[in-house]
Image (cartoon, rainbow, N blue to C red; front, side):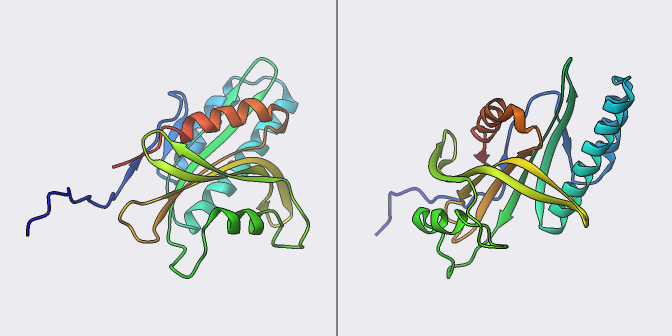
Length: 202
């Protein structure tokens, strides 16, 4: 008997849209260096230049850590405004947690409400979301302490979205957005939500 049901091909790629002025990079450091040079040209104040250098140092450290963890794609910006510098990153990872790992929403909520390092309760929100072109996903939002170097850690606004790959077993894509601009939390999360909403399988 011939089935009339269509055969769904397993997606092997993805697309994600970021603002036009963001640099897309192949996870080497050259695009970050170019962005740093361009940003420094726009900044005259010595203190702001030091802060800018520090932000790019953090960005390079995040980039290297992402490469070690199998990041597939990334984009970012360091944009100087009249009264502030905005730094933002988005990266996409391909992950396979394995069939023995419980990735259900209740389990993730329970596990992610505690810091694995010392058992301290942290502020993270875990919730289901629906991406317009990719369907159901799980989102984790919160402020995370990120290790930049051996002796430097920075608080980052983070939004991570787990998207199950159709027909891919336990494979998932992880969209990770982060920014050190804590005072702009509402605006940053709104931007990250808009970026994540453009994710689609290819």
